[in-house]
Length: 462
Image (spheres, rainbow, N blue to C red):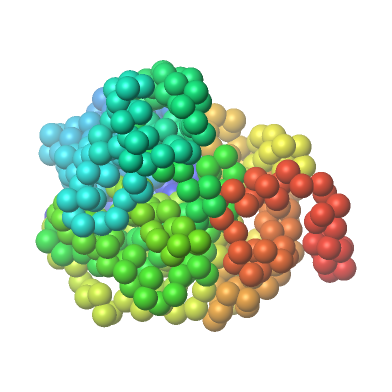
């Protein structure tokens, strides 16, 4: 039984877990760095413990320091949130060996599904479609050329242990493959300590769609899909649920495949299975699994009505799923806009600073996940995400209009954010039509500003 929960993260996700823990009757304890002593998560938690200096390697990524802190504060369980150590099999195992509950799957599952090559093979075993490519990590050019015979060009070279859009290269032909393969292997080794790479067919105009699942080790259920195609440098910027690209038959097949894979591995907790969807053919392909809660989980909560973080805690305690698939229904449309401390008019130059004035939007169907408050000074050591603005309405058109209204109400003085980018996006004709893919946003950003003048006129009129 869990009574005291240590939350090893920061920012909005730490605050999100604090709230879920308190609503579950648990003592919430936030583990923080020296740079995060004045965060809202620390202020709202029941207790807090410092785990090291500002540098993440010496605090949020320091497993021995975290385990020591967890023991000192008599924690029964540890929740890693997302990022940092959330998908570290070593961390999950260390928590277990210390006699505490890890809020997530077992270390073996994290290792199996966190390795892209192993996850791909596992999906094949479960009968889930995967992008045509190498059945295992390739050793060298000769091995890679064997894959070319069956898959062809262009090819995507991906680090087996990669994540966050890193460790990915595209090879258009044999010469490019010969050049890019050793570079990709070296990059993978430097970034992840694992130089293995594997190959996939490159789908140039694919959509990125993911399925949220919960599992109790015996049974799994899905909470439908999220559309995550609006990305910059392979980092998600704008998410929505459901996807405007899927018909009901494709949605059913996609979500059922995610459940099949989760049940095949005996998954426990919250997880997300990511897919590429080919608009031209209607095919979908599994690409990887995230064995943690996702940044964009709020849109799923908004359209299904379930609190995924609270469910994670229940499942980690060994309780069975409390819902059947027929209990989970889609209602309305939700959109999440990631607001980063970056200046979109200066090539997204980082702009951390002090919050001088802050006015959040309000009204029906609006949710704010953020740790910002007036007077808070952002430390320059971490990710630039400062808030998630989530809106819900009865349909997609209404949700986009509500998103525009919410962005108009949002006001922050002290540093630049990407809110202005989202305001332009929700007025873009292609975004309104749902006609985009994973390359859309970067192409849109590369266009002359005059191409978006119609959007500027809409904003200026308000």
